[in-house]
Amino acid sequence: MTTDPGPWAIALHGGSGVEPSRDYSKAVAHLDGLVRRIAAHLEAGDAALDVVESAVAEMEASGLYVAGRGSAPSTAGVVELDASIMDGYRRRAGAVAAVANAVHPVKLARAVMDATPHVMLAGEGALAFAKSHGHPLVADPAGYYVLPPGVEAKDLSAALRHHGTVGAVALDTSGRLAAATSTGGLFGKLAGRVGDTPLIGAGTWADQTVAVSCTGSGEFFILAGGAQDVASRMRYQGSGLQASVDGLIEDVARLGGDGGVIAVTRSGEIAFACNTPGMKRAGASSSMAPFASL
Ligand code: ASP
View 1 (cartoon, rainbow, N blue to C red):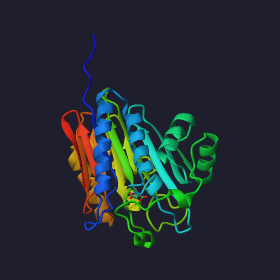
View 2 (cartoon, rainbow, N blue to C red; view 1 turned 45 degrees about the vertical axis):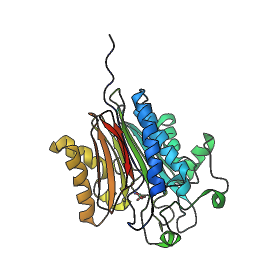
View 3 (cartoon, rainbow, N blue to C red; view 1 turned 180 degrees about the vertical axis):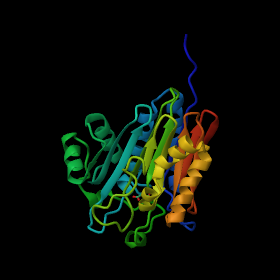
View 4 (spheres, rainbow, N blue to C red; view 1 turned 60 degrees about the vertical axis):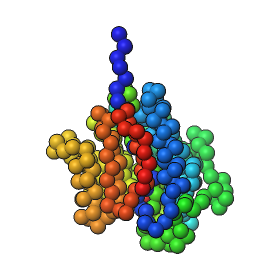
């Protein structure tokens, strides 16, 4: 006897640091194409974990967001990247923090999860791990990194502005949830600064109930409890998904931060929340047609 496939769902974000007067149409068009391709993969039975990894890797490579190719250097002139991935079904996770010039930080995070007994590698150790695993590194930073559309050169010297972290959360037809997030961090950050993105529970969370990815002023997401706070609101308070993501953003705002969050549940419900003028986002599910918007 075969069982019918369960519901599937995908949500993506490309960062919430948007300025109303700027043009993010390239990123929104990219998200639109990406979410449609991912929807087809999930519908065909692909695993949520593989889907969030490849979605984030594609966003990293695009140069359209402040992650991977669109990342900017710290005040010390080095591009330091953060990423994390979490398998909610098996409750496993991997992350890299402040790793210089990795082409695909999210793939490195997956390798930390799959090939080491650790959850996170940082700095020089993460770089050594990348080299020993043959992970591609940017050989010519000046020729590789680009300023993403919607980001202006003057932003690079702005004090701790966030702009375009990327993230993906997914439910597959076998009922497994996964989340992944990747960033170049805040503009104007000090060398060695690590935000919420690579911290499991802060920037990224997935368990058997919900998968969550955050973007915004990372210090405040850390202080508010971050992505795991959404799961806790659902588990301990019995809150619904939308109320739980709204609750996290209200706490971030109360502390003085701003940003956004995406989440998907085991039943295929999707929710978005932000307290910024917008968040590049996209979603699709077995009961919702694909969309992308700001
Ligand atoms: N949350 C990221 C960080 O603080 C920035 C962002 O989301 O744009 O590093």
